[in-house]
Image (cartoon, rainbow, N blue to C red):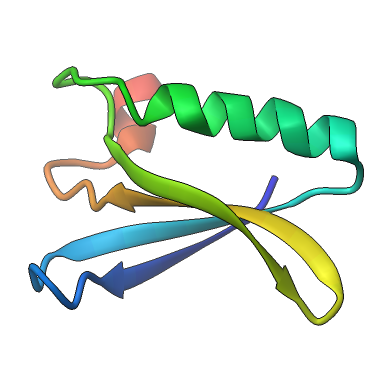
Length: 81
């Protein structure tokens, strides 16, 4: 659904994940933004925290992005298969 990049928080020096999701319409943007806003309030051991989210334009395309904690304890694929 989008692109995922590993980054580093320059304030805390911790690893983070940046997810870019392209948006094609205003309705899609509003729906995704609501999901991202809700995800920032989750606090559970089985859910990766979203730290922030916003929109950005890259090369004329609109994206929503979210920054999340980097999960280092295991591989998600091994947990769901």
